[in-house]
Figure: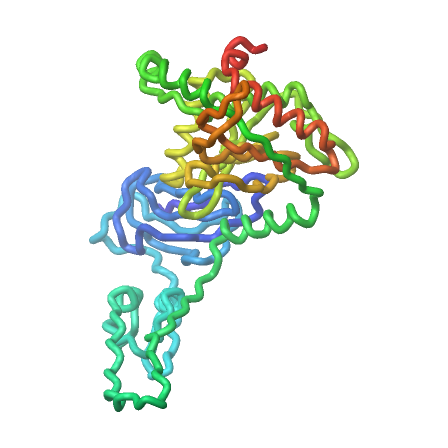
Length: 398
């Protein structure tokens, strides 16, 4: 009996996805819950696993094809084995012809274009000399023919230096990268974005962390004490004091959120993702640190779900982990503000009439001036600064 393999159910905010990678081919034996295919959406890469054990009998969608929610993409012959005849066959790809007259599969041509390889230079090993994807993968460009030695330049002749091949490679944007580019451009065109800056003395927080990090890790089952937990708690307190920063614009209405869902920006190989800590106002520092760590691991492995990245009333991004000293973060719509953390760097500071060396961090708050006045934005950032410089206020909620 053939079992249909369907794409996952996409949320309303995601219209369609792209089939990124097949991990199995027609005729392969698959086990129940074994990974079959990756589907890339605007926000995340979704994994589709086999609902039953059997043989992959038919592939209906190829790599690069657009996929709709719950669309059938393949079929599995349940209970069959690889040696048993399979009822359905794979989609036959019509071969194309290269400039040299060789036949090439469409998938192989696509891969060759992505790698900047001239298909006419590839020798096919498939049926009838057809060029396959494996031929493209294994292809090694031949070394350029050595040029004849040029005569030694005279005193009046200009010396021409051969700079070698100037190679360019053109590849299509992934769906996620394309969506990121679209949203970033949308922010610049639809918001009145402005950024205010401040700096925070990290001495007290660093001393607190140094004193209690080992005990904290021991008590909280291996959870490490970092700085993000304190910054999230400080942001939550500031959002309570300044509701407009936690609000959003919907048409001609302002929506004030009675909760604090804080997004934490995480960089991945495929692009930037922002998983959300739901009801951060009810979370302890240990829970926040645990949540951020779990999201980071999921992002690294491509396991984040769309639900985990949807919503959010405020975002924190930390470019300091990559060495950024100062930046202007871009608002994550429909949110109205985003906090940017940066590298901690020792600098000479004037304290009580004395010049002392202190670990300092620049903070940046980008906000939508349509909703948030400059006074409110500055006071919001100053509140975070004061809470971080005196972390006891965070713990005592004062």
